[in-house]
Image (cartoon, rainbow, N blue to C red; front, side, top):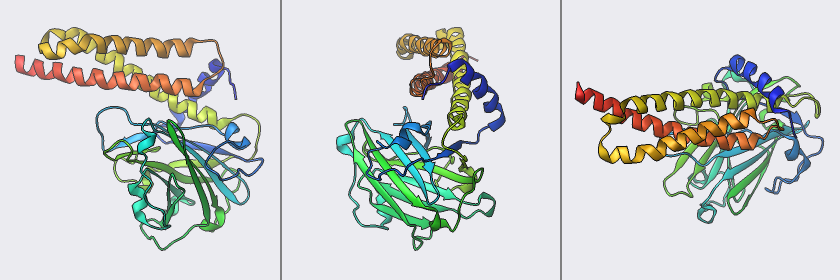
Length: 326
């Protein structure tokens, strides 16, 4: 789907102020049920908006490997299609083959948290690895079972999961406009040490329902793709915040470069150059008179995030130098 970037930015900027920090995904109805084979080649996945910007749980150095997911539904099922970027696809861990074994989450796996009635507080957990091996539970109660399918596949630089979850599992049937709690979380083990990330940042363990995002059930299969606008609002807010961090960091580094130890000073010049390139890439992207490329925007924002982290690390060296100088 192509959308004029100028019009989209106007909508996104206004919506970003309204939504605050809450992650929201609006799911449209699927005109046709997808085949659950882990390939994400069905027509519904070509229409559904992609969301990403997963946050690292238990902070660490460097950028995480990103995850993208899409949601759609029909009268009977909720469908999720997930793409897990993985440059070390040959190292993907997929040891668990039996259902309802919690160790599946020690593989490369995805955990889906669903809350049909957020004010009630009750929530459900469903998890699967790249083999489609499933685990499910009601909060921490592993005895609960959902009626659902999961299938995975592995590509050269990513792995994929496709799920069909029956609404009867939750004794709930969402009407158009219904709002459920949702979070999609990733357990990544292909990189060596476990890397945990979540679509809606839980600021700790995944079982934190008060930090879940929101899934809105749209009423139709066509018209304005509001989910795309919502996703753009998230990118707009994040881009603005990161741009401010990089600009502030550059100013602090330029004013205090003389306080840097020689070893750090040698690394500053290329880091500053990368930061300026990231800022230019963002501004060029947003100024371009072209259809919106959401995945391109994601890539530009990821570059900016890396520069923001570099600027912050260098700025702390300068701040420490000022303390010693005083």
